[in-house]
Each structure stands twice: as structure tokens, then as C-alpha cells.
Length: 581
Ligand code: ATP
Ligand code: MG
Image 1 (cartoon, rainbow, N blue to C red):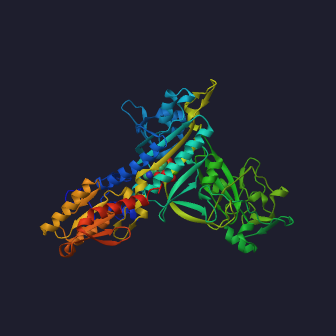
Image 2: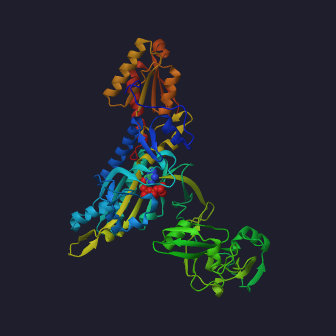
Image 3: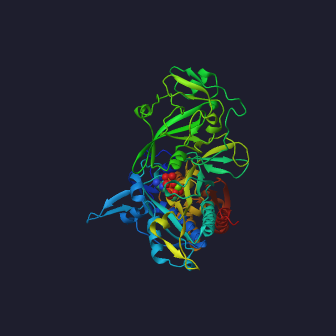
């Protein structure tokens, strides 16, 4: 490609809404154009990089027996009513009607469609397992699209679905995909970590998220330096550490705590540490047909993990109860406690709470707290216990006992075991060797292609621009003749460019009539891994200069060895990102 012809609309000024480096650089380098909030075009240079990521994904999926296909993005509501997701998906689901007034949607994911195909096409155990996949558009009307293509509304996803005879088969498919994802993200040059994850709205049990480590990531990862334990903070758990163990149970005391509504204030007034308190949080759990008042109990120094609570309750949404709703259950806001609550109030406690001895908590009455409360003595009732705690840095690793650390990550992929969640609802069954019918056992596996590209840039850039790993670089080499008035120099550059093209090296020649500074700046911004500069030194001493974008290393090479050296460097870069090497 000739730089003079390249459709790469680079920008000097970056719009203020681009908060993070990858978003700014994708706009500055002209990789993407915004069409509407959360809706982008990939421009030619950006799309080249996307195609490289797509090819890596495709190769790795095919190696595991994946079979590529393509499903429609516009889907009829009926399928989603059958699976039950039409009513529960919420506002992220873009719904619409056709000219006959029939309901349709823009697919945020494709479990329904693929399961309906398998339901019609597969009868016998002999046809399983199957691993169909596609690399195709999704639409999610995200509440807050941001960070460019990291959280957009329309985006490209690779989604593979596994269909097996039984759980053992699912385990094999899941393991294959875990391995394939590890290879995909390694080949893309990402520093990533697979972590145990919440299975979210898709449901089922068993999931990993692949996190590209980055300060700007929206997810928090809890991990251990001592062992392999790594989980999202949505799901991380630790062993209960109840306080007061071994103490004699003391009689309950009712004490005045005027104007003390926070755990900190009360603990200070009572002269105890926060971990001796139990905090009482009142929520409204919203289900499809009803709302439920929920009292949740947690050790005073812990934070509530609302995702765990939501999953435990199985509700669609959670919100804090209003003061009036709290009063309606005979409690004073700010002084809530479990003692004396009516029999019909649902009380869920974190696993630590029932084990605590002599804890403090709200008395239910304004300006009052209770001392030395004990669940084990029957001071109050708990409907259910659950793991509700948000695990933070510094907690004890549940596997090896060392201290846990935290990091931020961008979720670039996720794999789920769906079991029979969709096959049962949609009737995707097969007949086994004995003639018995079973639901197919499913898994689903997604990679955000654009988000992966943005994560690569987030991890690989400097103040001058993008530093592409060669495997996903739009172009591999740029040849820069410094003086476009020097016909001999231009000819040498042209020769090298042609030779590289002959060897299938993806090269660009900067044939523009621009100052060297402009050419170098653009080369840095666009992030070519290898830059060849042909200037005065070539004329005077016969040496061209190769500069590596990542290390900044400069190598001077005689003209005769130039093409061979470029190809060697290129091969070494590819080898460095090959998970088999
Ligand atoms: P998130 O938690 O970030 O909203 P998700 O868990 O809902 O994502 P999945 O349903 O697991 O997403 O989708 C698979 C992959 O698709 C994600 O790992 C991510 O890489 C990508 N993806 C999901 N939502 C978006 C989005 N709004 N924009 C770009 N990529 C996305
Ligand atoms: Mg996910």
C-alpha cells in the first residue's frame, strides 16, 4: 500500500469524550469513526487489524473442531418467548416490529437461534458433539456505552456453542475452548488472565472470563500470588471469619446511640471494632411478577456483593428499600436490626453472621442499638444463609491461605457451561444408543473482537501512538524514503517495497511529499512494528536504518541485506507470539 493512497483519516484533535488511551488512539489513527453513541465504523486500517484478530480466532476455533456459520441478527420474538428471555432481558434488548406488527429483536446473543436449529437437525447421539460458531454482529442497547468499541452498542462477537450428549462431553468442549481462548489471546499479544466468573444473565454454572489486565478495565479481579486462584470480585469467596469465637455469650443490652447511623459511628461510640458489628441492609428484590422486601445481614466491616445477593435471590433487579418501606416493616431507618422482625420478613445472612458471638446491631428503634446479640442463642431468626461478601484485596486466599491481591481487567472473552438451560426450554433433544431421549448439554463461548483490539492498544501504546504486536498489526513494515526529491533514494525504497511485497510482507511505502517529521510521527501513531528509513546515510555509507517500534532499537543495515534482515526480524516477532514456541 502507498501511504499517499491509504484511507487513514488521522486526527490531530481528539474529542473530549475519548477518556482512555485506546479510544483516543483509535480515533487519532483513523481506525474507527463514530456514527452514533456506541455505534462505530471500522475504517480500512482498523478493519485490517480486526481481520487479523478474526483470522486468529477462526484458526483456533477450527483447530478444536468448530464449524463456522452465520445466523441472522434480526430474530423473531417467539423464540425468545419460548426461552423466557423476551420478558427478562430488559432494556438492553433492542425490540422492534415489522410491517405486519410482529415483534422482532436485534440479537444480543444467539443461544435461541442455534438451539432451535439443533432441535430440528439433530436426532441421534451419533450426530454429537457439535461446535457451531459465527463471527458476527450483536446489538446491546447498553445503558452507558463508553470507551469506544470496548463498550459499544453494536459490536462484533465470535460466539461458539457446544452441544454434547452429557456433562462429561461438555467438560471436554469447555476445556477445548479454554485452551483455544488462551491461544487466541496469547497470539494477539495480550497480557491476560482467565478468572472464575459469575455466569450472569445467561445462567448455568461454571464460567471463566478472560481478562486483559489494564488499569482502565471495568472489572476487578481478585487473585493470589501464592497459587492459581483468580476470580472476578463478583464471585470471589473466602472462608468465613466470624468474630467473638470462644467467648461466653453475654446478656443482650439495649443502648442509646443518638444520631449514630453508620457502622463507623456506632462502633466508635460503643468502643468496639467494626468486625464486631452486624449491619442490616434492606432491599427490594424485583421479580417478573412481584417485589419482595429483603433484609440482608453482613459483618460490619464487610461490603455487600449485590451480584451475589441478586443471584442468590434469583431476582431481576435489586434496589435499596426506601425509608417508608423500612418503616412499614417496623424498623427505624438507620437503626435496622434482625431482632424481633415479623415472621414473614425474609432475612438472608452472609455465612459469617450466624457464627458470630456477642455482636452488635441496630435495635430497630431510632437512636438505639443492641449489644451482645447471638444468633446461636436464638436472639433472632435467619431465613437463609449465603455467601454475600465482596472479597477485597488483603483477604485470605480460600485455596492456599496467602493474602489476596486485586487488579483491574478488560473482559475480552467469556466461556459458560449452560448445561440444559436452553435445550430443555426449547426442546433440543437427542436419542441415545438405548433409544432414550435426553436434553443436549450445552456451553457457550464469546469473544468481543473490537474489544480485543482495543485491549491490545490499551496494553501496547506510548505517548506517540500504537505499538502493534505484529500478529494483529494492520501492516507490518513501513518503508520511509526521507527525501522524496532524491530519485535514487526513492528508487531504492521502491525496490525494497516491491521485494517485501513479493515475499508476502505487508508493507507500506510512505511516498507522500511530506517532511520527514510528519512521516515519522504518522509511522509512530499507526504503530508499524518495523520501520525502514532510507536517508542520507544510505547515500553516503550505503546504510539504511531499521527501527523497531516496540523496543525503539535501531539497526543499521547495508542495502544488500535489508530485505532479508526485515524478514528475519518479522519472523522473530511472529515466533515470540506463538504459544507453541
Ligand atoms: P460485560 O460484562 O462487559 O457487559 P458481558 O459479560 O455481558 O460483557 P458476554 O455476554 O460474555 O458479555 O459477551 C461475550 C464477549 O463480548 C465479552 O467477553 C466481550 O468481549 C464482548 N462484549 C460484550 N458486550 C460488549 C459491548 N457492549 N461492546 C463490545 N464488546 C462487548
Ligand atoms: Mg461476559
